[in-house]
Length: 367
Ligand SMILES: [Zn+2]
Image 1 (tube, rainbow, N blue to C red):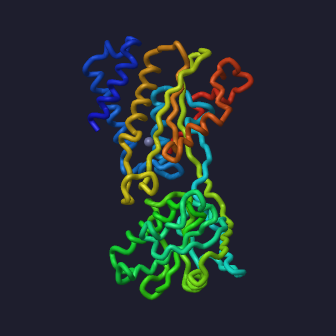
Image 2: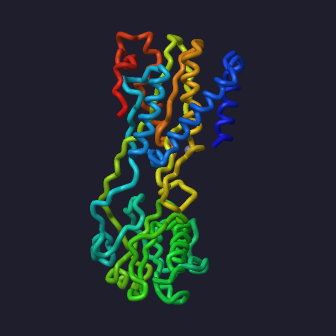
Image 3: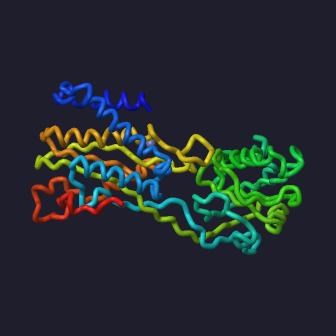
């Protein structure tokens, strides 16, 4: 933490030495600045922010904190009366209904099979390709990435050649490695069946972190398992109705409008990984505080905004944006660019676009 603050302050010094700002700053003032930045990082990386994942309450808390800092620093909100700008994004699917067609029969989701990865589209068709327990490279020898377009890999989760039963601790890691291997063959889907449901019953969930994303993985129950095991190299189809889960993320933006034709934009993302479900290097579900990714950068930006505002430097307009949903694929910054209504020249067109020039006292109070 301390090292990060020093780096940040060095950056501030670099930025301001030429602007004759920090060279005159006293040791006491430097300490105050350091304390303020430490305060921002501690607040944003606090457990109560729950890892600041976009679309969650943790993100809202962080958003209010940053908005409040911009307001306290005397900056104007952009573009409207609040400092926060919502944008919507979709994440994952909710499956309404689903079915598998196999040998002229329809099998419904939940009754005959389960979808195991929540983030993919389960509409596919292809031919079943049986790979046994799928643990060895040789199981896949007839497949390679150039001709697997219609392959639906079938893995038998009966691992009795290697272990006694599904209660063995080695079972899930073994199964996960087999499924991961199968997904890297790049098939249409991977289907799990069991030739020994007593010892190796159907599973309801699996860790797919090692697997290739976007390849559907399905586990079948006893009836469908039997049918699929009986006839290799048969046509299979899956159809599902799903709706995308719509979520809202927020950018937080404030600016110093000096009435100049040019605007310099400073940005830092403030969201992080929440409880680390995806994008984390750890498999544990725990608060990912994200002090260095990117509470520290956000703290630097807040202080830069405050210092610039106090300095009276007015060569340009200065815009500060704390971006949301960066960890989900730079969604906040993309949304910011796409929301064409940010008219940074609004001081020249006050009559046409009054709403973009609302005063800070009109903003809603953060709760
Ligand atoms: Zn990051």
